[in-house]
Image (cartoon, rainbow, N blue to C red; front, top):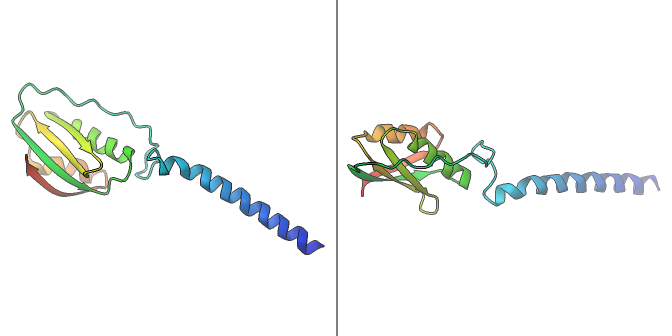
Length: 124
């Protein structure tokens, strides 16, 4: 009889652990989790309106896995003066409109400082 009781206790403990594991994973699978260290609730910085677009660049980025990743990259790029950026997570790229001459290394640094990898920067 004591073997049955210990088995029931172990099963109950495993069910509780499984419940909390699944409960805490659901936001991540919806793309709301913090796979990149964020809470999934980072506010999006609205892209600046540029008076004069001098160039448009396509930045290919590896490592963005969720909406929070996309927001982080877009916010970092839009925080650069003279940049209007929109990130497309499905294509793993950012469309970056420039209102002034900005070196590719500055764009790359904004992305790599977040832990993502820039694979290419091309002029659109």
